[in-house]
Picture (cartoon, rainbow, N blue to C red):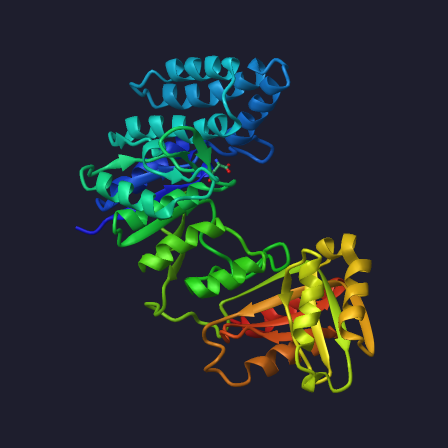
Amino acid sequence: MGKIVTKFGGSSLSDAGQFRKVRAIIEKDDRRCYVIPSAPGRRFDKDEKVTDLLYRTYRASKSGEDFHAVFQLIRERYMEIAQELKLGIDIAKHLDALEKEIERGVTEDYVASRGEYLNGLLLADYLGYTFLDPKDLVFFSEDGSFDSELTHTVMASTLKHVDRAVIPGFYGSIAGGEVKTFSRGGSDITGAIVARAAYAELYENWTDVSGFLMTDPRIVPEARPIRNITYSELRELSYMGAGVLHEDSVFPVHRAGIPTNIRNTNEPDARGTMITHGAVDEENPYVITGIAGRLGFSVLSVEKAMMNSEVGFGRRVLQAIEENGLSFEHMPTGIDTMCVVVSAAELEPVKAKVVKRIMELTSPDSLTIQDDMGIIATVGRGMVQNPGTAAKLFTALSREGVNVRMLAQGSSELSILVGVDEADFQRAIRAIYDEFVQD
Ligand code: ASP
């Protein structure tokens, strides 16, 4: 029988009612054998995530303030779930122990990791699954980087002997000793690691949305969900700011050829978004898969007659950028111009130095900097086979009176990037969406 690894986000496990939904989902498919919980998330709009409360507790105790009031909020969250579900586990004992540990002084990562740890204990008890502590399965090196190979070896050999388990997300340890967490949202990564080690046929990531939307719903409220997307398209969209998944969670499953399915715990019958390696079961109804964008770019345009025949010109421009610790995002070039797109916030403090250095190194005819640019990526694996896609896109933008200030086609031909004034950003996204997505 194939295996499915299911990861549940914080909102999917925020209270006893959500725990019930999670159990119903797991019981519906026998292949759902490894479950990765996050810490309890928000139950309503202004609610606080347990992980945030834990960080607050840590900061209070560290600065010698009374942390017990905040800790009490955390205690209530777990106690309520345990009591309402009539769980056998003595969670109060674990909470008491944690409170004492914090009093004695433990690390920030350790305190933060307890959100997942305690939720994992509750969920394992509720499902009747074995509890596996990722402290013994997920490893970081001394320098803090994730040790993927050691983790894979240990995780894979452990899972061989455990049929059904709950493995808390978000943390591991440095060589089996000190607990260390991933960055925020890191339970996604744990899920992907487990999926790879379990040779799962599918990695399900259950959250509170029915998959990815084709674009930001704050700009296009009726944005449709994406049914199928490839990992490469996802990478392009998330690089441009569309985020549901932790970026580092994509690599382990992508490499292992395991598809990821984003599902909604509150709408379990919706099929969500399926992310696959290459071929998809079913094509999307539109030529484009999604549109994403980011604000806050600056464009440095360097112009020099006969630039195209000057050996080393591009390298010298980039040298000036590199020497000032900047990374560049894009680099569209013309015959006598070269543009380098960088983050405006990163450029700001070193602007004068960068300008001076480019002048010294390249003696250009002109050097201009334009700020306040937004970049929009229109992504779709179907774009290459469809002639006229670019024409459609530009027609839509010109109809809206949007001035395209920069243009680049991703070399993978998966995306077309346009740079627009920040003031035109939302209108441009709306126009592209309307052009390509019609009923
Ligand atoms: N609980 C952690 C956070 O809030 C990790 C996660 O939920 O993935 O960032």
